Image (tube, rainbow, N blue to C red; front, side, top):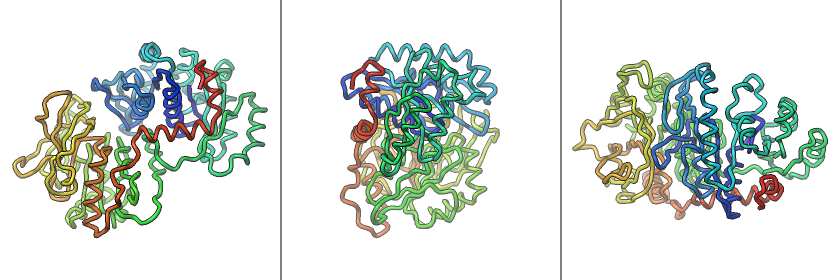
Length: 500
């Protein structure tokens, strides 16, 4: 089990690396995270919803993700309310106090899911959440030492040196644990170190002397985004590009942004700069303006207006610049958003940006489905991708109707749940496109079509390698190699009785 001194220290990344390392060694491996709080979600084959990080870890392990790998998912809707997803299905909207009152009843859910995952694997790589030293929450723990106890799992404690204070964080975390839980910590890992790791040697020796726990290694800072981000805190870490900027992409950083790893694929392309923006001025110079997914579409639309970003986006479209809306962003591009049953917000009706002839009505039944898609545009940003077939997924609570279907081409033809490809997704008007499809930019052909179109409009030559960015499989192998070179993975294999 991987636990951390806090949120965002790299537990998900290291869990993905270990899933890959043990799978490459020939073991049947599965990930597990009892409770995840994230707006970055994925869809399982049976239409369940889990954290995107656990889906990526499953793929790195070479297995199909299941809802048991992340039985509890909390999707924040505000400062003190989240959508509660249990075993893949949205059950309720709860405050923290309401959720805490349910935690005792959820413990059997965690235990049963873990048992099923263990029964199908030689090794389970478990990820904790936040810190096990949150002493005010210790009695209601569902995800850290509680899981380590029922699994009988040794724990590796991860600290982030880039934040500063890593020695104090590691020692302090151990000091706040109950003696039996502290005894479960079998190794310490320092993550995100920049520079020559030998300068840490005196500190590592003293850390071992103070705690009695071995330091298993120092993982270097990894500039590339090799795994999907779990937390929107990671959005600050979009890597800078080297060389000339051929295409500039401005993604609006909504307060309740969801499934933001859709755009990692663009950021990985040579000459493509992806920026997260929160002001109208930041849209200046962007070749593509993106409205991403949102957990609270109407509230984030109001935020756009309060920030004067709504007018700036409409102005960018009027000037002929490309605008792309994905999921909640697609809904915002329409004329009207209706919520008569208060599914998403207390606002019964709100005007959209009016860039697409669509209207959306929020309904109680959430759509969570994997789809097979075929791009259909014959003009506009995705014209070169017409006819390309690929995979994507949908997670949304709205039903969207195109008001002028005869004059508004769809983004794609879709096959949902194995049904015949007789459905349509999205809408396109000139350089404005909207879609419910997450993951469509994972297709190299789709990315290449979009980037070549954007570069041509800006009078720039396209990059010859666009669309050939490394696959997730290649990235996971690279991640595994980096971690294997930095940590004593043989010691980790010995801890779990699975030699590496």
